[in-house]
Length: 303
Image (cartoon, one colour):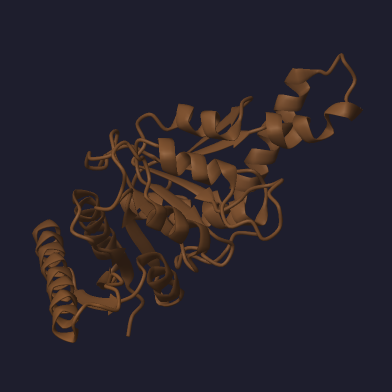
């Protein structure tokens, strides 16, 4: 069975936006769409009769199937030719999705589900799966929490020279190629090149020289990938700023931001870096979080 794009479904508008986004992605990648709902059965206590418990269970499961049917219709409306399969499982959504992600090409989630608190920018399930998923995870969001995601504009990728960043760059090139849009490669250098060695720097630092070194580093990182994806227009941006502000500043018209799950300076074993986490909360377009093992299933890695 071909690897599918896995979509978390819970009946929310956010999940339906994610379903539409994933349907378009599935057609671009010629892969099936796997709509998945995890049904959580609440504890009913020792005094609840077996008949009542069975009735509650049946109602929740039927509701889950209704949500899956709704999402399937939305997927076919967006892309009539897409292959769709549905699955309902009893369990906690984050855990079930993380487990299922080991067999998926990509996981796509809404920014928050029906259980989200009013004003919350990203839900716990989306955040948890982005932190611990076994493949790239895309959290679909628009300018406001309930908005549809933008459909035009470039793909933006954060580049810091780490192994995780290299995986993000691979995924971003594949996405830009599939969408036939430019790729904006953003490298922020104040954290990477200066902050870690501040005590060793003289007071009369030649900032322009530092910036030139960072521009050269980014150009070297992009060179191999540009050879493999000659059809992708690459715009290189070197920004003296913190990573989150630098990326958001370059992504005002983007349709997708791609970042590694954690960048340079992150603690070993950390599930999700501060930059990735902040983008999930503040981006105005979908965010793809890519782990080292989640390189796009496209052209082989650039050297």
